[in-house]
Structures are given as structure tokens and as C-alpha cells.
Length: 332
Image (tube, one colour):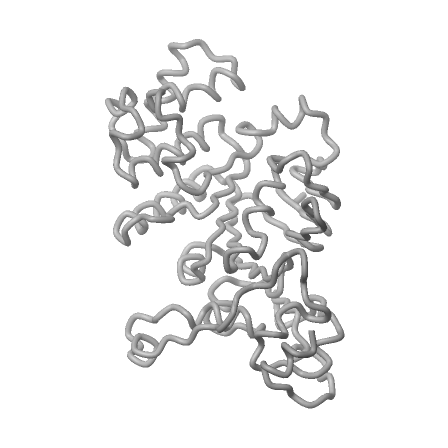
């Protein structure tokens, strides 16, 4: 049985804002899945939906199977039991996620006291173990969040996520705003913890290079959908969808002067979720768009062993003349 299986997940906010549109994902214990895409592509909404943390106004459909049980149909008591103990989340921006008026030791101990019904002494002992596990001295338990560096606060968030030995950890931009040295330390720490504790990890980022270096598989999202999914390194180095290729090319490669001096980006922005273009949502920005892309949506299809991509250029060739990006924009 898969640790996590997401089937045809749809999330719509008031006003017809389709943030997630028919996403399918799966993850086994001890494996790491990266989710990439620009801001506004639905990554964080996907993460929050996995633990039913979205606002009440959001309409969610589909299935989110955690150890075979659908999170979306659980009673609230079951959902509360799953959070922290079954699955936990490392939120983006530790300074905004930690309570500034409580010591970090008390914040780490809170889920232990709540979910494990531990004594105060047992919770303090466990808190010390967690701090040491993430590379912080036990003495820092008495510190307030503002007394820690950005990297230390992020380590505290990871310690909190591990507090109740969850089977699944969701990390939403866990290295945002950290310098490259601290980022590397945090990523190695996450990898080590996943390997040692046999948990599943979903890591969300806009940085394909980080995900390719950290994760086993990579899913690239655009306009609320997964447009490519496969082995992380293969997707990063040999993308089959033009959007995944553009994301990869936007980051200079170490040892590659051509990419360093002339990184290739992508003009424009993802579409407004309340006004997604007809056909393939990416076609107004796609340099390889065909006329058919403006009218026919593209589903994920086989793009090689263990790989899928939602592109007309993958699989059987679809006849039709290529159109320039400007012509494609006018077609919407």
C-alpha cells in the first residue's frame, strides 16, 4: 500500500478560482517527491489540502489517501489525530510560523503533550532529543524565536514536524530566504532524517536544481495541474514538457559558462486561476505551441520509462503548424 495517493484532486476558491485541477500523485515511505512550479501554480494549495488546512470556503474534491484512508472524508477528530502524528508540515517562513512570545522548547513540546499525552517531563526529554537530532544544543529550548538565526528557526520547524514520529512530512519551501550554506545544511538534514526514519517527504520549491539534488521524483505544476512527472534528475536535465525545460534553464549551471552568462528564462506569468486559457494552459507562453494547443487540453501521457508529460509533442505526433507565442496568445 502506498503511503500517500492523491487522485483527481480539485481545489476551487470562491469566485471560480481553480487553484488545483485534477492532480494525481503518489508517494511511498522512505521516498522523496519534489513539487515545482512558479508562484501561483498551486503548489502550496496542494500541500495544505493534504492535511485539510485550507479555508472553509475552499471546495475540495477527489481523494487523498494516507495509509489507505481518505483524509477528505475523515471526521474532524480523525483529522486532528492525523495532523502531527500521521503527517506534519514544515511551513514556508519559520519566523511567521513560530509563536514569538513562547519559547521554542514549549512549542516543540506542545504536539507531544497533545498527541502522545506525555507527561511534562517526558515532553521535555523528547524536545531535547529532537533539538539534538536537528543539530541544535538542548540549551536553545529556552530561547525565543527572535533569538535564533534563520537556519536555526528552520531547524526548530523540522524538529516540530518530527515531534510525533509522523509517516509523512510536507516541506513547503523549507529553505526560503536562507543563504546557500545554511540551505545545503538543511537539505542534507532533511535527507538524512528521511533515510533514517523511513518517512515519506513531499518538498515544494520553485528551484528545480534543489529538488533534483534532493528528491527521488519530481512533479512540475503549471496552472494547477501536473504537466510533467518522473525521476527528479531526468526531469531536471532532460525535460519533456516545455515549461519544465524553461524552469530548469532559468537557473545557471555550475561549470557551464553558457548558462551562467545567458540563463534562459520564460516571458510572462502563469495565468490567473480564475481565467485559465482554453486548451493547454501553457500555450500562450510556449515557444513550441501548435495551433491545436489553443483548443485541445493535453493530459499526462507516457514520456519514457517511469515518466509522464502533458504535451502534444510527447507520444503520437499531432499534425498542425507551429504558431508563434504571440499568435498563441491571440488565440485565447
